[in-house]
Amino acid sequence: MGIAASHLRQSLDSLAKIEPRFKTRLAEIGYPPPRIRDRGYQTLLRTILGQQVSVASANAVWRKLSDALGGEMEPHALLEASDAVLRGAGLSRQKSSYARSLAELIVSGQLDLAALPADDEAAIAELVAVKGIGRWSAEVYLLFAEGRPDIWPAGDLAVQIEVGKLLGWKERPSEAEIRDAAECWRPHRGTAAIFAWHSYNSEVI
Image 1 (cartoon, rainbow, N blue to C red):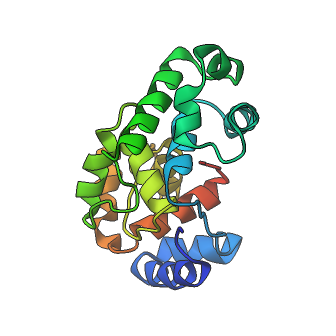
Image 2 (image 1 turned 135 degrees about the vertical axis):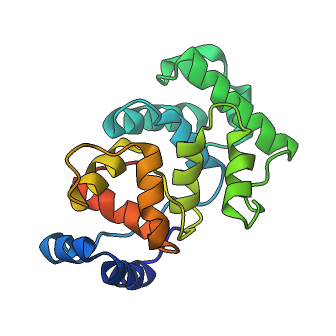
């Protein structure tokens, strides 16, 4: 789903009016491409697999897991796979545990990714209750897979670095500092994050 290209441009134009430094940088690098992922289990699983590894490494693990489980990567298939199969695909013991936990929640119906709460903080709270999902992973999922426009992943290192540069700060701001700085950007904070990644030239998932 994600934030559509037309909405992303409109939102960034509005953001540039609020913060002139965004306008200056926008003139230099242009509009970012949309960052859109499918809503549902596969995207959340991919987010787990991508934690603390490079995008290239995460993609390699994903391809191996897809080959092992079948293209559709159904949660039932993951639950039926042996530890050896998951290990062969490149999953650590911890990530295997997280992946199985997610699959169990989906299969049991305890987690319905098609019916997360409309309130952003409530949706984040529901996602972080999943084993292996922290606030950053929940925010990235809601931004890319659900296109929620005001999600602000202030704990992301690239966002901190780039927002600090854009605002002319001498040192990288803390998570708390850029949360405070971004309050005036509501309801365009998701666009601000996408633009920060674009400016930093960083892939996420």
